[in-house]
Every structure is written in C-alpha cells, then in structure tokens.
Image: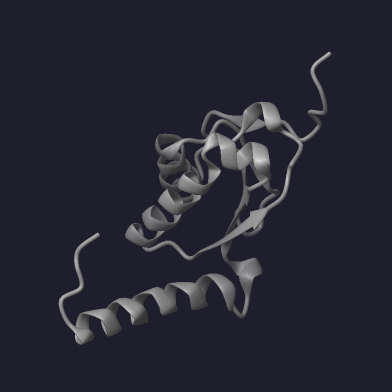
Length: 130
C-alpha cells in the first residue's frame, strides 16, 4: 500500500473505500447482484478464507463487478475450506471448495462474468464421506 502524502489523498482514499462499502452493505436490491458468502468459521479462517475474501473483493473491484460480499459461519464443509457460496441472480447458489486466490480469480472471471462452470463445486446433496 502506498503512503498517503496529503489530506487530499486521504480524503480521496476514504471516498473510494466508502463507495465500495455502500455498494456491498447498503445495496437497495442485493438480489439483483452477485452474492458471495465466505465461510469464516474457525476452520475457514485457519485455511485462509480471510485472505481469499480480501483478494476476491479487490479482484471484483478491478473487474468492475457488482458483487455483495458477506461472511458466514460454518457451511459444514470443513474438509474443503476455504469454501465460498456464489449466488448469481436467477440461478441456484453454488458452493466452491478449496478456494485460493487463483481459484477465486477463475470463479469471478469464468463463472460470474461468462457463466462457465469451474472445478471445485461441492454437490448440494453432499453430506458426509462414508
């Protein structure tokens, strides 16, 4: 992160960050936006979910995507952490497992932007390994 050298730079940075927060937290119609839920239970945090979420937020901004990011508790897929659920408007949510920064980029660029499925989907009816 670059050093802030003036009050004007600090104000500009604050304005940009505030507008990003407004988009994510105060959206008038979140159902019309892509929603990404990141599992942030202990296992998710230990597996790097916080870093993945921060990376995805930066990448979504870079790609100019209207995405609402939220944190959630355990999704029950501890074996596949970090896990994220992506809900594209008009589609059923999809849960992705073992998400790192590379896979996060792929999810945003291929699935969210181009409607292409990517590897790492956890089936909805998955419950446990027998």
